[in-house]
Image 1: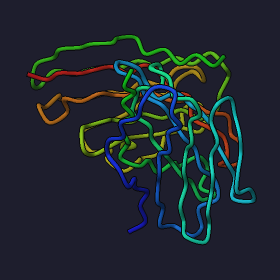
Image 2: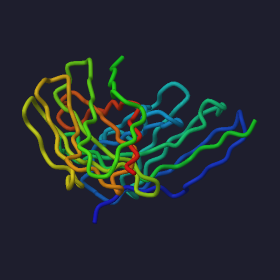
Image 3: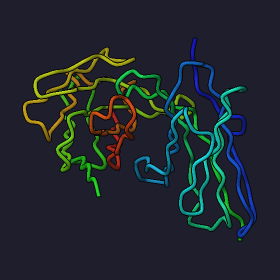
Length: 112
Length: 114
């Protein structure tokens, strides 16, 4: 069936380095994508979203890249900080009224 | 900022009890959702609502019901709690957005059924 998944369950980076978290999706009709950050003991927090008519979108220290050809989504975090340590989820929808499908999550660990 | 508030952070209930999980949002959002989050299974949609008194089943509605009597409040009900309903429950809300607006989540209720 259609699914959203992540390549790596855990990513460990040095403080100050850039982080890249990847996500693959299988539904070619997907037209909206979101990245969430979930810190321990908290609910998922919206980071950034992108629509399928774009291939790149930038926020504060974060960039989301969308490659529709290979159905791949990535989240880049510049100058990773200890406060970026969390689980990151991608999610997608396909014109179904906010019916998001979530990936399993990647844990980002930032080493001081 | 959107605030989604779940009334309890932690709950411990006995098997067979009726359990109410409450969620309130303060942004006048039409859409509200209940998910459960389990290790290795990610977030799974239980029920959602697009309007007052309206509800739709998600992917795993069995053993649950919901109530939306007011726009800002969405309640999840476990009619007879079972141990396999031990989980983290997350409430979310969103504006209609034609399917392209983010969900805003509460901080979750960790329910343990003994």
